Length: 289
Image (tube, rainbow, N blue to C red; front, top):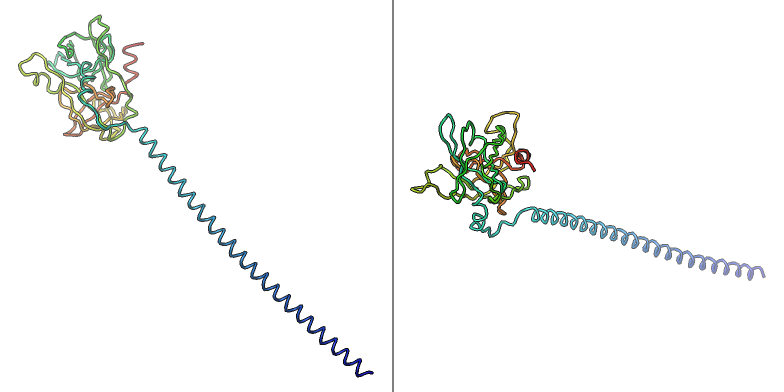
């Protein structure tokens, strides 16, 4: 009887141990699967983070590209369309406004150029053209000549405003533009009477001379007229020639707007013009409303 009971106990112990071993094996298997699942999840999370980082890099690159495109578009909007400029039409547009200026003074006679800025006979030129003048004569493209009165001058800005002694109100006035919108590299045209009457030949009066070029630089310099160190001008540097007699004429953009007064030539291809925006207040005070 005791042997049978002992055998039963042994059998139960063996069965229990086997069952516990199965449970342990299953638990170990479940734990391995859980660890494998966790590793897979960690790998998936790492992959997702890498993918998100790649997408962020792509978004950053796209934002940079959009910014660059916006800058390009803004430059295209700001820059004037210089393709196919019709300079023949441009000359025809501005030439009637360009005048020939003759000056008598105690130093002798001199010549220069000017531009009609109002239909009732106001003319813009350089101060050095009329410096010391005792009399001024202005000739229009048509050959009509008028005496003129000096209304105002500014030595530092090398600017003078004349008034033709006439009651006419139908003179061909130029359109005044803005020099602040000028860009380096932009095409320009000058008009005036270089060398005075030397180019007139046998005629008593000849046509104006026109040159084309570009804005070479916007150069801040001491006034080339007064050499006053306190007078700094943002000169428009151009490569279009300025010769004696051109002074006081017109510097025009490709829309035919007056943007400056050609003033001084320093060397071939290195010339300057007084920007129109710097002298608008002088013009306004001279001509009134």
